[in-house]
Length: 209
Image (cartoon, rainbow, N blue to C red; front, side, top):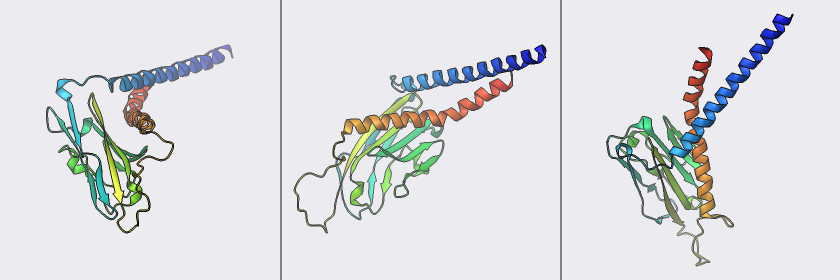
């Protein structure tokens, strides 16, 4: 009985150590990932991003392209090292991280064009609700960039009763606050996307023990 209890305790201790090791590895990985996103980019992976000049003006029903072009010092763009995110007022529209995920069915990004450095956002048959601030986040190896585009949408069929400037942000909100929300969501999505490979490595390491 004593020997059996000892074995049970040993297994519990070993399991606890494995869990602690996995948490420690994840914590270190997350810290380094977030820390490195703010480091100066090296010459080999230097990133250049250009977007549409703000404001972009359109009428309801127009097809709109919010351009976002990226260039690296050593082309072509390696899609395995690339991550793209488009946000509108804090809501993620599109994400590319190994595969393209369209979260808003009314917008489009061409996966084929990404390797050419074209991450432009296409919005067909635009509605007035699409007005506002758009942010394009680009990550490439150790480089990262965030660009903002303001889209103004007018409806010629409506009588303009007010001459006030169109409000691109909801009342009571601040573009700075929305930007911070976008950054947090981007970091979380980045960690979540890369966690899969880390989890696989950790499990492989633990199983080999």
